[in-house]
Length: 435
Image 1 (cartoon, rainbow, N blue to C red):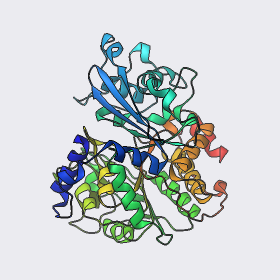
Image 2: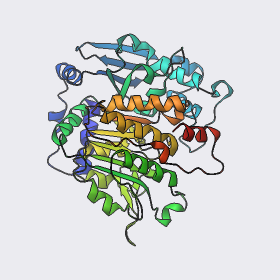
Image 3: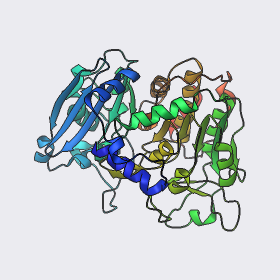
């Protein structure tokens, strides 16, 4: 109830509309309603609450059973590690660059040094978050699990958590997330409203960057390989990617309306650099002297979108200001704008692996997989070719997981050659050959 209240208060503060329900209307989260939400989605819901020195865990199964468990954090305290520290060090262990609250680069102590499969740090989080409830999770890998994190748990790459046998969680389960149980009602209402729109896709890659974003403190560079990845995805969906000077904010906002799938490969900023009170912006191409091309969170909130799926394939688009009821950032804004399903990234996984994963994702949708299953299979395909979690575990699906019928072109990805710099890593070149 508290998480839902915070969500609605944000709605009231940002949308400034009388259409927003009052707290009395939204906080009636009864046990029967919770059970009905799990039944309607035929999903297992796992909700975490951090109450030091424990994490409370509730598991709601599709049959309506609700079970409570707890994970003790005292072992971390004995190692002088906080939960946030171990989460950030886990991300560092798989290759993500992280900083602490003071902006200092996080380095791993000797005992946390990563090996080729990053086993040890990922196993710590699996032991804390998954093992206490492992007997309550579905045995069918295709049965979805909806994780509802709390505070810093929103930074956890659930798909990459490893058990004691070095098996990743994504190998056993289909995974998605949500900010709260009741937000699942909102996304279901969105899905019912937009279902059945004609097939149309908007694919954006490497918009021209306004010169001011190339300077400090942003220092952004053009993403030429993101453009090539977008072109591969567009070819899969039978459309043309928009890039460069053509990918202006004005043009993209106009195309977003009445578009079923929106896929944005562009830089994302995590800070509230324009002072709107909500962090996050997508950097599109400028269209004039007074337009720097930044599509900020407040502007997204004012949209009324009919898209069934938005994919934010940019740097760390799943991050933002972390609160008790979720991440206040780009993903939240698209939900509030009317989108039932959003795929965001927890880090920048690179254009080469993103190209493979996303083309596989859309092909899986076309063969009839639901959104969560399509993402899971795409992750496993990418993992088979590029084993490190940094290359396949960044994306997370938020919201609805229904099938999204569409047709895709059967293309020979070997024709979609992606250029590489001279200093490209050997594994990057091997991945291209595997296409």
